Image (tube, rainbow, N blue to C red; front, top):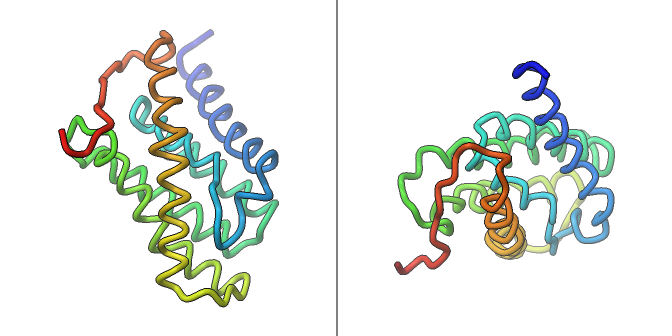
Length: 167
C-alpha cells in the first residue's frame, strides 16, 4: 500500500474512533459534568502531527451528530487548539505536555454549554467540571493508551514521557 493512502486511512480511523467512542459513551460525554472518553485520543498528537486534524474532524462529526452545530464548531476548535499547542510545549512531562488540551476545553466548552444548551451552572464551576473530566480522559485514560501504543510498532516516534508533574 502506498504511503499516502496509508496516511489517509490511518487518519480516517482516528476520526472514526473518536466518533464511535462518543456514540458508545454518549451519556457521559455531553453534559455539564462529563468525561469524554474520546478525548483520550488527543494523545495521538504526540505520535502523529496529522492526528491533530483527524481527531478534530472526528470531534466535529460527533458533535454535529450528537449535540449540534455550535458544539461542533467550538468544541472541535477547542480540541484542535489544545492539540496544536502540544508541539510547542517543550517538556518530557506527560502531564504538562497534555495540559493545553485540558485548558482549551476547560475555557471554551463551558460557554458552549451555556449558549447552546442553556446550562445554568456558573461558568467557573463548568470550567472546573470540564477540566476534571478532561484530566480523567487525557491524563488517565490517555496516558494508559499512550503507554500501550509505545509497546506497538505502529508509530516510529517512541518518546517516553513521565507522568508525574513534580519530576
